[in-house]
Length: 470
Image (cartoon, rainbow, N blue to C red; front, top):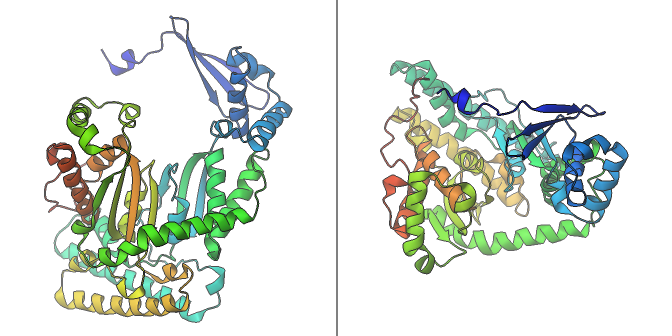
């Protein structure tokens, strides 16, 4: 029997069109229950319609026909915005793109657990054109512009060098170009412009915009947060309420406290060690000795064999994994959701280092030395700015994507199993594979199962070669 026959609907759906163009489609089942799908509605209408369910047992189609725009405004304004009934705001979603921000701005934009989306890939897009964004505090600083342009020059030089070398090696263009982009991307400055697309519910998107606004002293980040909030208010005019400006200071103080105590005290040790040694996994919210053996061991085996549901596996506590990795690879890890994510630079500029893997990919020793020398010069200039802007994050705009940072991610067991499988394959960036392999070994040791059951632990000698499309 064909898959289309297995998934055929038992009864044809019925559809109702509302006055504002929103459509409601009912899918009846022979047992008497039904699934109702809402299509083409504005986010606040979706949220308001869902909110009526708690007070009215009538079928959704009845409330759909009766719900007016005035009623929508009253429900959202009164119950979500004024009373703080958050679950209402979580029923309406927005899909939006944040375009032409810096790579640092993009990182802060996706730095929340509810992020669902994509960022322009440095592996498949040529960033040779010198397009960048500096915060308002540096717009008129000639040295700042020269430093950023210098990293673009470095990017183009390494990219051309790699393309030529891979051509001489006889690599197919479809394999050579992404690999060259991937390596050269480490030399792009975080000021380089990029774009992000994301989907999120209204409530969490508003909260994230407020969080970005609280990055006091970081002109671009606060500007993205402010503009994002204004756009949300324009699209969903009943959802955004005013906040006490003092909340910005509170949020900023909390971040500083976490950064000082959770990150910076460990950075000096981490940046001086190799990546595999710096990767850690902390099983935070349950006693691994009491809960994991043998119950969790059996649970993991079942999960690997039968693909238990995410909701089921997600009940078993939060796992925090940490590591030291380049900003270039951090972007690959941070696209995963839903994780709580944070990153931090080393405590002092002298501890900033460039991930050596990228230098190792330069085939010619002479050219490699040339790249190392020019990169060292660029980092020296960045350190000058570090000392000048010691109390702000402006330094990030002068750093290349290849610098190492300390990061941590928090997620439930089901999400980690997915990430370990996905990011351990031979086609994954080697720097990412290295840290994922360290996590796999820690997971395997903690839960007493084979590493091969958690991910692909084979050597990635063929990195950069894409398999043929089926």
